[in-house]
Length: 195
Image (cartoon, rainbow, N blue to C red):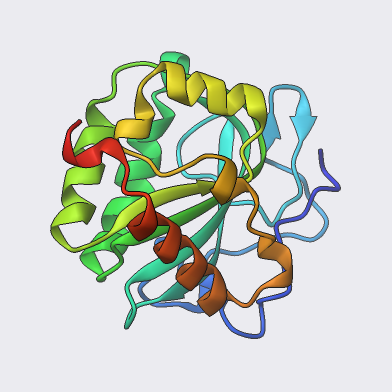
């Protein structure tokens, strides 16, 4: 796990540790010491801890004028044992929303498992971003993770599915990803309005 780095090809466009509005502003990273772990495995030191013992993030890009952010995740998303959605919402989403971000894209290629619990944080988050014309989208979810999300009825609050998984995000510029996801959200509105 320690050799899986967060995506870094947009670093010339954005660095969260240098962004005064980022929850990770002034975060320092070691290139030599591994401290974050996922169970017994060390993670690459560029991943950001935000309270969960099993889920880590990297804000890859934020555009405050357009109100969106692109965030990569790694680990196990475990609401059952660790209430990871609470940490994700309170430590990353809430501070970013206060800065004008209301569209969230999460790259979930490295999310290995998902364990559901109470959907209250998802409902709260969906309502908040919708009031600003926003959404929360998950891209490149593994099939078993998608099944768990669907079984927990989180498709009422999050945008995900085959079309979102088909976006080749690593070959696109951030603006294009925002545009592609926004088009999908508006073409096939989720059940958020009825959830």
